[in-house]
Image (cartoon, rainbow, N blue to C red):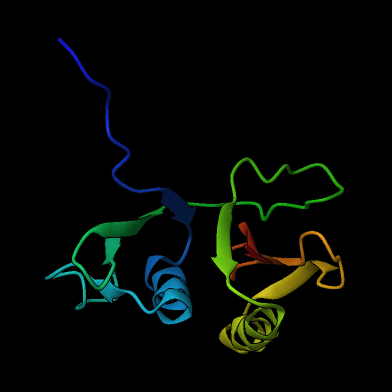
Length: 132
């Protein structure tokens, strides 16, 4: 046997599969895998990139305590790093993320070396948007 496994997609646990999928669909301009775009009582959904490759999946769990990053008893366990090409785009995406329901957790947008902001999605998962 040779080679390595290939990462297919990150999977985010959530109590509200459709709600969290919609947040990321709108934030990243993704679309549903055929068949996943109907029905609200779903246990699993997959979002695809414009080229049809998998981007993110969502799995229903009975309960999920929101991460309390950077302080508190519930660690983030995993987060998504995303990039934009400029500080102006960082600011534009900041407004979009908040309008879609993200919560700002940390703001380093004035850092001259690596401007970034950290958010929590509606289920409490942290994600970063930074300039690269």
